[in-house]
Amino acid sequence: MSSASTTINDFPQGSTPTLHPTQAFLWSVRRELWEFRSIYVAPVIVAGLCVIGFLIGAPSHVVRKMRAAETLGAAEIHDAIVGPYNFAAMFLMGVCFLVSIFYCIEAMQGERRDRSILFWKSLPLSDLTVVLSKMSVPLVILPVIAVVLTIVTHIALLVLNVIVLEVSGVSSAPLWTNLSFTQMWAMMAYHMLVLHGLWFAPFYAWMLLVSAWARRLALLWAVLPFFAIGVLEKITLSTAHFGHWMMYRFGGAPGSGAYPGSGSEVHEWMHLSVGQVLFSTSLWTGLIVAAVFLWLAARVRRSRGPI
Image 1 (cartoon, rainbow, N blue to C red):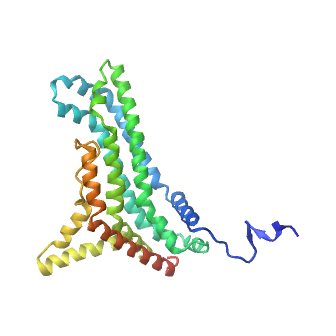
Image 2 (image 1 turned 135 degrees about the vertical axis):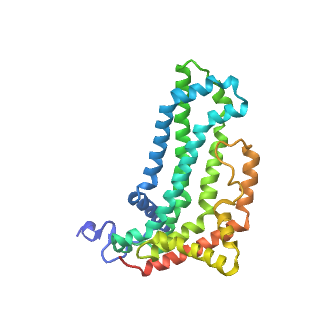
Image 3 (image 1 turned 180 degrees about the vertical axis):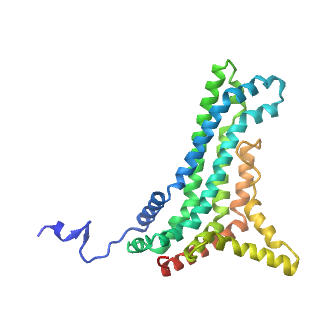
């Protein structure tokens, strides 16, 4: 009898197929990209809207600003030139952050709602591998998408900017002296990978845990405990320490006030801020809490069935 009749998909009959942990993780990540196309579709749409909006407004707004450059100061010229590029980066940053939140809320509950969890549990994938693959989306995948799309969008805006100025008979020289793409892209990468990634990791992990546990209204269950703790503290102790801590976690990390396109010196700023964040107790405490939440999410997913 041929070997083909005794094997199915390269696995002997009666055996349990196994995957290398790395291969299983990568396939799980690909599954997330297949099922949640908004991960990359939403940022691509935003990048396209930025380019289209710039193309519509450039012939009048940009040309007028450049022609008035002689009457403006250096700071005003810099702001006029950098503004569209900074807006595109900030827009992509905000959209990817929103996508991260809604993805985490839906990631675990969605597979229970459409009953696909039964199929995925039949595969040789551990619950922890699945949870870690879902965590990689807000932690790595979306930040990388945001940075790459920012680079592509900025290059497209620059090409359009030069073409519009040259066609209008205006010199494009001020563009090269005011645009510092290395600085803008470095700050974008810092924001997305460190601040929107590592710094917010405990919140993403918490939302994944709630998504694995809640039967419905996962977003409400994710937000309600934080709101309740703040209100309870205010009523009983007349203090707002928890609220201040929440504000710190969402906006108090070193370097969170800087943004792509700001005038800070990139090398000095990046050295100071990245060092402060990566070696801060708050970051590592948050990562430990995130690890606990992810472990709990894997345990909860193991015991949960379809809704």
